[in-house]
Length: 198
Image (cartoon, rainbow, N blue to C red; front, top):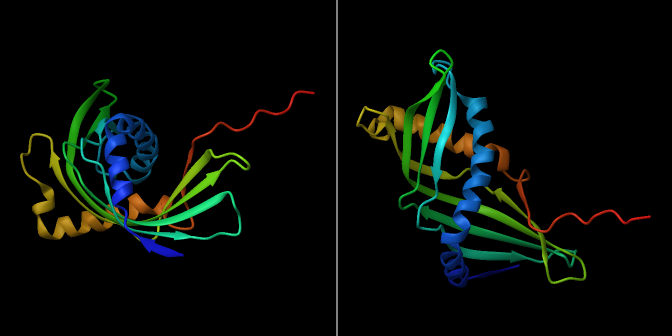
């Protein structure tokens, strides 16, 4: 294993971010909704739904990159320090009220600041210079901060000392639990090979 600068990786991600962010938003939306359903506060009426999600214009940046040798030639493992200070990133939560048969905007979340240590595993297609899938894991619980505004209140609840620390702890646990090492989030890149015809 060895440590190296991630400057080159930040440059590549910066070039790809504008075009790839909508694709990542769809993936995050699919992952977030089940977590919100599972951890919805009991006092909230109706179902909470992510009505809008945007990752904004600024990509995450990476600190040091540590690569590991594995026994398999088609597997690459990389540990990354990840920092994200978002720009125009936000998501809007709405509560579905069955009686009204409509979604009522409830909460706006924006201005994300995230620091995390992540492990990325690249699985290659044997005998080809092609990527099969990527797995992402948190090596430890991430540090998360953000602006949280109940719609119409005009106040950031993260400025309320006791409440803000409680929310940060909950967010850190909820956001990382499904992906905390050795659990992971797997992103399929190449389609699974079709079964051979008889």
